[in-house]
Image (cartoon, rainbow, N blue to C red):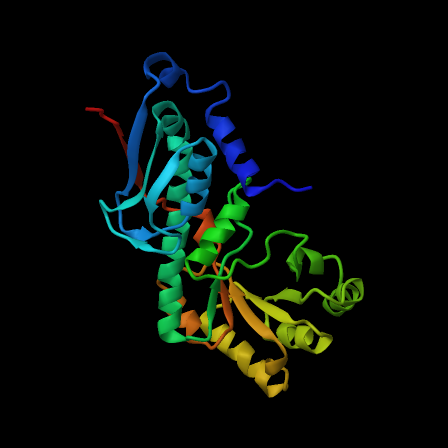
Length: 282
């Protein structure tokens, strides 16, 4: 049986507290506090659900909060809660790290998706497997919250025949073997030329990834697929070194999916802070 989301979150917390929070245990009394998490930058929120799950697991009552996918402005509160001071401080850094990374991914994905949508509303931005080890579930979720497609979750999740596979098995044979292996999984093939794209489509590929092509090469490949009567049979994905500057040109080519490893491998966190106050009694 696989780990639950809570199991994974508690593992992250154990990394930060292998033998408890010695500072709080030494100096903090057993008191109830209220606290709030505030954004220090504008962005798209992700990780609210995970942060809430962690806090509530330790008996902290979340009293108000924004939702994943909401837009947040600098200095705006995203979560307020109350509970024992020691438990709030125990969870603080792990929760802020999760919120920061996931919101950074969601914010960039939302920005890239908006660029593509303006040029080609039918095209989708997707993530890749270039994620943080141990954090993939949450990296992929953040891409979805930001309006992107998560792509396959792992090597078990989909068939993607890449250059290193084709260095061992010829293209047509690889597609035929993949089809024989499973009738229920789509078959994606990575190609680097228009000729190979046509070969892959004719051999029965469902998705063709055009790898590291310039926009003109992408256009020529799409034209070749159209001329050979196979463009409508396949989903066309492009990938490889695409950034914010080149993204509009690729989207204008008329492809179906643009996958970007930078959504998760070069994350710029959104910064959050936690402010805590003791509950005063009359």
